[in-house]
Length: 470
Ligand code: NAP
Ligand code: MG
Image 1 (cartoon, rainbow, N blue to C red):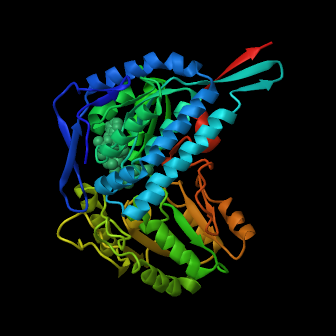
Image 2: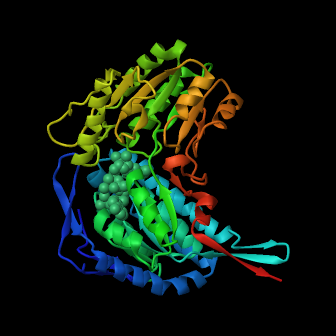
Image 3: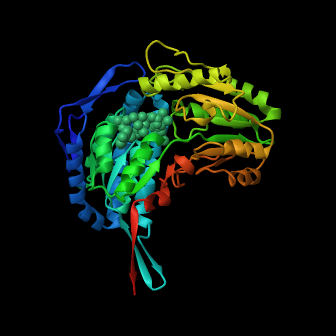
């Protein structure tokens, strides 16, 4: 894989301040596929200065011009689709088909939506004798995780550009090659120098320096709740705006009367996609006591259609998890599930291959709400099936975690499902198999985060208001 030995700052690839490197590992075979510089506070400072210098000019650009440049960026990404998908497969381990369709497809759709929004959004509103101006916040420090290497970047960069903000991105250390390709696309699209800057590096060094930099006006972070809490505290102390997209433990509630086979198979797919490494994965399936054993058998059958293996093999549906640490962590949770008395229906803690960070697709039955596997985010291909007695019990279980990011409800009709969804403490609910929508606000209740991404709600995160009274 091609890697730049530098940081993209002020419209050019510049040498890093330090000499440290981060090796990029292919999680499917544990080989080193490239290396990028590990940024320091000095690199972050140079990038923030570049973003500050570019801010007044970019903020003053007509929204239609920003829209055209976001559209151009989308077109470059689309033209380089194959190369990006291959890079994501190499550094994340995503099956190639999924990489093309979802890892590249979704950010293309998000970029398109912001090209349109930038052109059509009303950056001014009239309220009585006031005109309210919606102005860009300034310089954004964006810190992204590895689970959707391009999508997580575009979900921050596209709205920031649409709003008129400039940015510094610190991508996950596990997936920096996709971020470098993105920076190339920004350059090729003709986005002015300094508007977007990239500093690769580790979280505790480059990430921390970015979150704490006084030249950053908004920190937008996606990742673990533990790091999010720290970033929120740092931003709070500096009275800096912050957006936190954190973990989840989302419930898939199957009410009596729903199409059980469809609900179970979709639910299994939702967890196995991306090897369970989606923040909104529906990792807790809630089934009525009377249908419980039938649902368990259906889930066991569904999971058997997810062969693990080489992500470049078209037959593979389940790639490895991202790294050795997650490999240990996820299998540790499976062992914990067994230890706490859950019934293993498929998979298990044993690694299926000697090489690569593979985890067998795993299903647990007889999971009770207080078990560790029902409470903590596992971030691997592990589904827990819980039984409920009645609707009130289902609601208690669904709402009974510190998280509230995603969710799903299946019922005999949409009305019944919506009535239940209204009572869920969570930011998104799919009704009877509802599909992902790039315009719908994405974000969490409770400890799943602060703020929303995507669509017009995501755009407002990058704006601040000024009122003029007449
Ligand atoms: P993480 O540490 O929270 O990583 C997210 C991003 O934050 C990465 O760019 C990371 O850099 C950076 N970071 C880490 N420590 C930082 C600090 N002190 N200051 C500023 N930035 C910092 O997540 P992870 O370690 O990759 O994964 C651990 C768990 O987080 C997973 O098992 C999963 O439960 C959860 N997770 C959630 C999401 C989500 O979308 N909600 C995504 C990924 C992970 P490095 O790459 O150098 O660590
Ligand atoms: Mg980390």
